[in-house]
Image 1 (cartoon, rainbow, N blue to C red):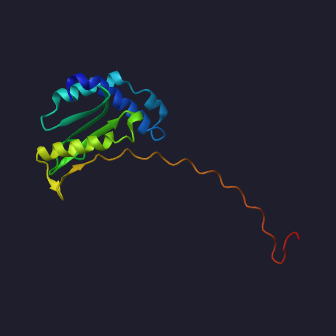
Image 2 (image 1 turned 90 degrees about the vertical axis):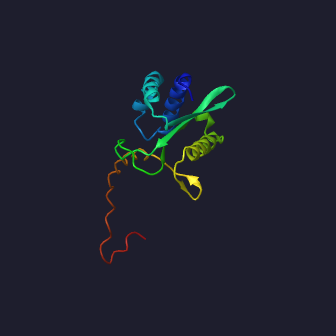
Image 3 (image 1 turned 30 degrees about the horizontal axis):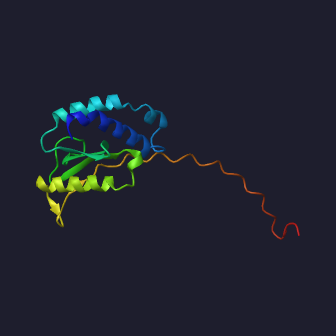
Length: 160
């Protein structure tokens, strides 16, 4: 990935988040995601990233369709790194390319690059832990209980 890819990556991230989190995050929030704002944030992060942070893009038919980023594992609060291993920071695809194998290819490329960078391995595969998933939305409130019909009195078999 180069700095020239940041606008396309921002569109991939925005559309990917809108598709992946629909029904899990309030729709008003998803509708308000702005690729231009995301691109500005990406520019700052990309410029300040240490060399061990790797951003990869996937291309199909001359256009970008996916993006992944990984690097050293971060602490629980995003602060100091906690050794050993790496962390897959993100992996996004344009929604129409989900299920085409591009996500697997991006993950394979991340694992290959992680091995080249010397991340620790488990059973011959570099370790890249994944960030936690967003919390599940709260369950909808239960429907109010409907009263049960009265039970017949003891000895009464009810209507015949």
